[in-house]
Amino acid sequence: MCADQHGMALSDVTTRVQLDRSHPEETIFEYEVELQGELSEEDRARLLDGALKCPVRKTRSRRIGFRTR
Image (cartoon, rainbow, N blue to C red; front, side):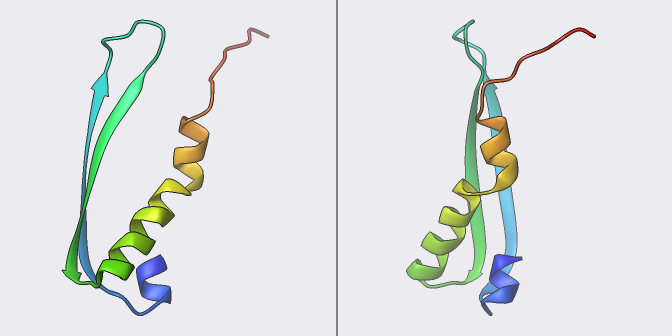
């Protein structure tokens, strides 16, 4: 969406995510983002920065609890 709004030549995005459960007290998502297309380094940095600010990532980065009703 950001690439479209700013006229960036992003042709495809590939993400890879692995779940690291080596620490029982926390869940760690290790991920890679691969951007494809005729992008400048500035475009790539802007898109990757946008991924860090994504509302879904922000939600998943917070502590999660469960409450019985």
